[in-house]
Length: 323
Image 1 (cartoon, rainbow, N blue to C red):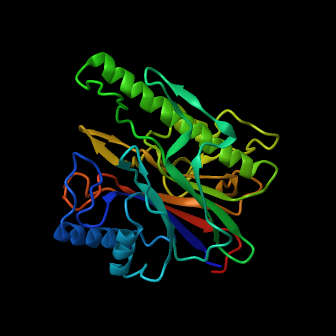
Image 2 (cartoon, rainbow, N blue to C red):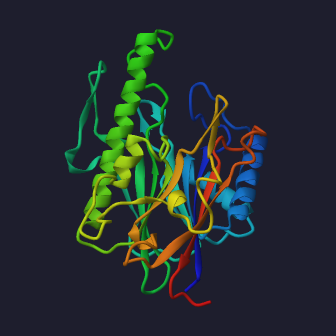
Image 3 (cartoon, rainbow, N blue to C red):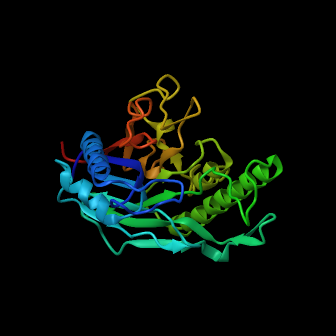
């Protein structure tokens, strides 16, 4: 078994095949643009050198496979995911997982919110009862004895959710659209928490949840996913922890990371969360988060082929692994 395992999350920003229309206001990639983008993605994942990578904004699994084939480290890695479906006449991007470690069991996806969770959206005559982007759940074998459950997620964006020809220049409708987005993101966060609780309840299951949360770690939506406020007999229960906050190899208060740059503001909305099995404060720990690294130097360069998100890399040291 490896002594160090690396997990990474990577929002690639609208990866589609040449000529495919992702959004009405976004020109499709040309053949040259597609090759440049997949060259850049291959370069970035080789820099990450992660054992398991969760991807977001995948409009074509074949396009991602094209990028992997260009890499030096992932040409033979396992890729799991699904192509997006058309919803309301619009393609919705999906997520994917790439692993150089073996997978155990069947890969699951969740499109509908669990436990019949449903919330009405104000002024729209609609309800939120599905994940905007389906959640992917895979089991990764770190060894024959140690299986880690990995969830790849992409929660609803902060972009205002307009309905029925609403005017985005109207400040009242702008506020209403933003409120709908917040409600949808919060509902998805609760749905994800339900999935995690169902998996963790009564089980000792190492868990990694990673992706684009479209909110900072301290936001109520992120805290819902982490299960903040829950304290079991051992002080952990089924809570998750922000890997950036519990890393042992660096001081998160001194080394500030970020994954997005929007209107001059640096924020981290891409996160890797872990269960207590990777928190050294737990008596059930099988390893610890050594370091969380952000690859974000491209954000200020604004290269057309590059993503508008930085990549997040988590290094985990496993206890009892062979040197």
